[in-house]
Length: 207
Image 1 (spheres, rainbow, N blue to C red):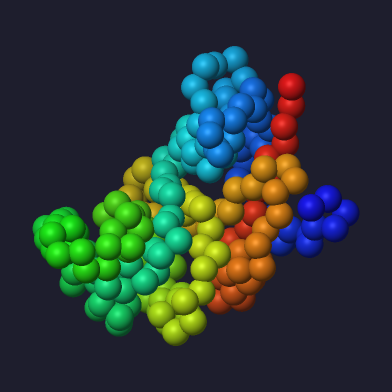
Image 2 (image 1 turned 120 degrees about the vertical axis):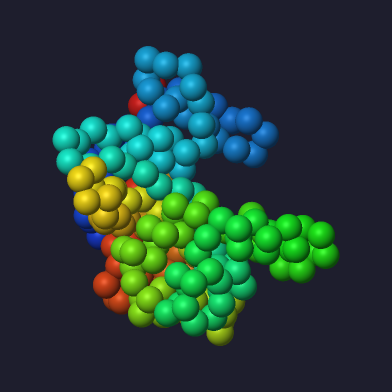
């Protein structure tokens, strides 16, 4: 699809304050990889490049973290922590998560959701930043309609002094001419409508 025919990306804000420019494009099977740093030798897929660059951000008051999100993340979290997001904190501990994942592994239940469960710190950050009401909107939408188009990444910052998680960003990562799917457009739009920060970051290739 040409750039002219491609549906415009959602408004690219808020700024992530990381470089969009990538170098050293190479193909490995059906995957495209880039150098994380122009002068380095570490290659990663596009979303990993963005994730690593975000985590490397420096600020006197904040540290930066984040995680990749699986396509079934909202359904997986509902199966793991319950359909009522108000009750999630009662189940947000590593012992419960490990037990549920072990059960899924042993009997094949919800096998398709197994790898969509984020790490516990990411779940805690999702809860703290998004809140129960907005998370419930996402869970209900995906449980009811089987909606796909979940952004690739959830990025956030942590205040060094207060330990508060904030600055949550849901980010879909795209190569220069790679179109957003209709589902991705809809999901980003829905997230922004309910008061979350979601966007597409489009990489810029350089020789």
